[in-house]
Length: 137
Ligand SMILES: [Zn+2]
Image (cartoon, rainbow, N blue to C red; front, side, top):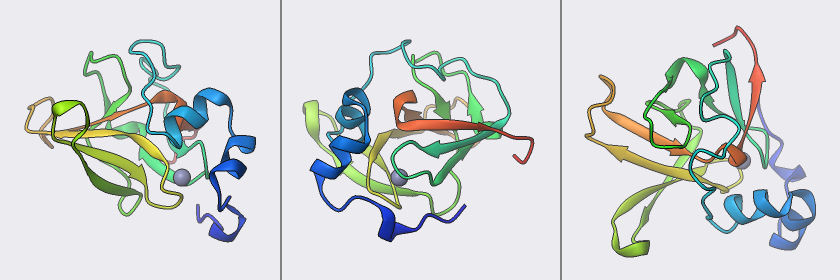
């Protein structure tokens, strides 16, 4: 699904109106939902996970796996959907994952943990995504 970028908010105040307080805190202020509280932690429903801010497709349920870390985890993103940033907050070097379309914060990517053959874990906040149930995955 292509997102019309011209319809997206251009200021944080516009985002604040469009999103719930918790969505705004995570998506636009790089917050993190508490582990095991997100609605998609254990979800197995086939479908596509969209950015809750702009609607762009981010992840397929086919790449979701149980990492037992308390957040939805994927080992691969939809090509071109993600923008990566270096995150040195909290005394760690991590890879921040943002939506390439609207630049909203989604979570972090971790490599080399060996959970799956792809050896990557996208640790994503449930509140950053909306699941569209579909067999087209
Ligand atoms: Zn987005």
